[in-house]
Length: 289
Image 1 (cartoon, rainbow, N blue to C red):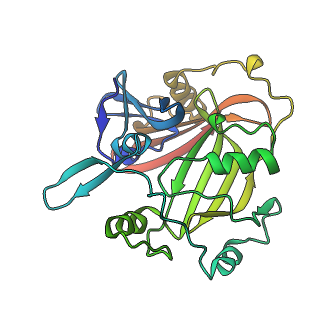
Image 2 (spheres, one colour):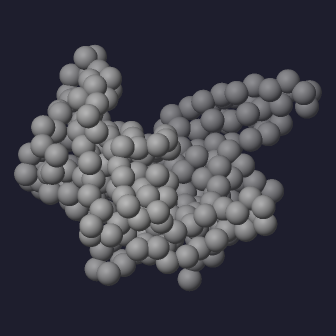
């Protein structure tokens, strides 16, 4: 059973989803959990706080194909069953889609692919990546498996050029099908991110640009990967020792970012410590282990 937090869990005390922090004596550790709904796996990203897993209620609702709304008048989260787009509602290719694609193409990015077909679609927030996964396997990487990646999605919500005669359906479209939707698809190893993956740009429901991030290491073999060497407490102490501030300054804040280095095939950590001098001047030091 996973306790549910408010939808802003990812902003809890400024902790990123890949860093470890201690707030008010409680250790907050990034966590991922795969759940299966109707034989389809969904990976949730949240936090382990004192042995309990917390995930954004909006993400859980989306995985279950429910809608999740915030009623600002009653200050209440409203969850309701909301079906996918009716079969009679079709995505309409915007007349300016080529202009949108050209706007987001970046000549400085060498590893970039445009999708010429209109067969690769994605509905904002649906977490249905079947169409994208199929394209990736057929055109980018035959071994591509979405289960090995964690997808983070960002969407500027505006009006879109998709219309329906059904008023409720149109409201759904306006809310969930953004004109520009960015999918950050990152490869993870044992719950930790790598710099390898893809960034896909979706325009009014149509995936059109694939940017390549990082480089795959052909020597990667998960069975040979050694677990992370240090605990968070050990990393903290190593950073303090390296900074040479033992008993000199007060430690105000510690932030630990753990990741898997695809180049060296090792787990690594970046430790940032905020020290207080005379309880008023902040000194920030960063170390990598």
